[in-house]
Image (cartoon, rainbow, N blue to C red):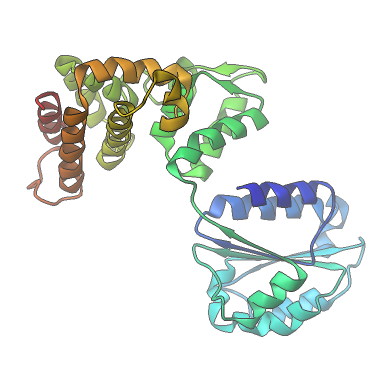
Length: 333
């Protein structure tokens, strides 16, 4: 993520490398950098002449090299953007000679999504020597919240801690989806707004009262009736509340609750658990309802139902019934 920001900063300063190889399993960062280059390298008035876009399924390495060797027609530089470059994998090493001595007035961008170039290929070494190689990876779970918060700030928003937690629970690690939802907020809220749970419900469509985050709180307090009421609503909207994701949220909570019991002091909680100080009181309260041994038992229950949610031993049980059964086992530990 830091490397991505460094690249974007250089692009903003009009400092371009002759070659960018953007590869890996997190497509959002690849799209973000390629979009920044498309916006910055060639002026709008010159795009018809100095911007060439190729698709890996429809082009060849020879066509890309031929275009890259040409001189720009109107501007000082031309941009050659190759999307879906992973489909050129079998012939990709044919770019090695060009990448050893790239045309200085060309910016060649290779978007190689969902996989990475074999490290043994000569082309990779030549690009690394003369350009930029970025390997993108999905964010770790503890990085998603800070990323959403930072991205929201770029759109002009602050977040109420509960609203941020809702976004993490609802949107997960799909950064492209997160970004679209944050952009949607700009059409409904003025810059400088502190986004609240009510805003999330109104403009993103994620109920502030019936979601995995609220289920987590209800279970943390052993509130069986409220947990069932939340589950009934969630089961009626399975596309918004996929069971594996819900179980993942609960597992994360009880895992941190287990860790909470091992702390020397509450003051350590935000750093050790990786949560906002706003939520420490929730762990304090839940710790009165579940001791360390019980929290460990809940984790085992959740592991069992994670397998069941994926079809192992559930015998096609409806989502609501499966969740109710899981909840009964949790509050009974």
